[in-house]
Image (cartoon, rainbow, N blue to C red; front, side, top):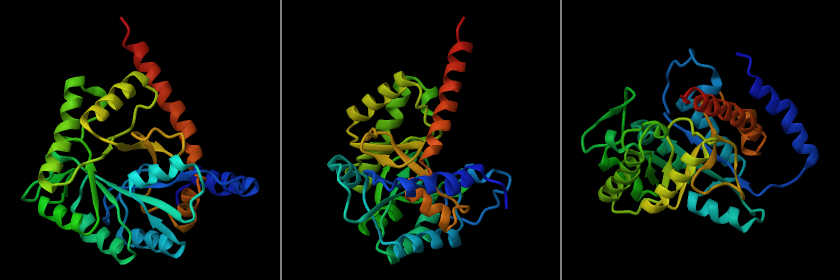
Length: 287
């Protein structure tokens, strides 16, 4: 087993301290999944892996069911957070990025078995009437999406071409945000409320963040998620809500710690690192 400092700190430092404090927070865990597939990603550190094996995903969903969790939509989750009070139920939001076909094949049957639902974010350039691929994996077709939608699965935008938006012009960003929303609404007949930011979110770039938020509001979005690690809380920006990455290396102990908020500490070094990178880019970009 690889040494994971994030796991050690979460389970043996943060979790015990939280139990001692025994304070309830108005927060909701939003789990972030990508592909549900058996894939050799041993070349990456467990923290950076995005794939979850079908067996690991099964164990994680069984844990949620056994622990009494129920799934919420992003809209309902935000309403709970705005109410500030502790919910009488254990709420979790399950999200999937990239619109892979293995959601239809591997994830949905299990979600349906436990009466769970999820929000799937689609990069619309890779979604078609016939099968298309993104990053070497098959993506959903529009007919599969409409079938899943009838069963309660929600769909949101993940842009058109899945670019790093912070590197684009304002006009290009608007096109990615607007065109993807229009495409999904046209193909599903349902309003698209949610947006997921692709790649690492530049949280320290406040000017970009404001511009993107204004663009999302203007396009008619009501909420969104990003890759800032943590639980969504009362003070979270509803357009850039934090998520908890999940993959094959989240055993029951670590998954439960994430659900309980003990993994949220990661956002601090994450924020410092991103702020340092943003500052360095600005300095290097000066004449």
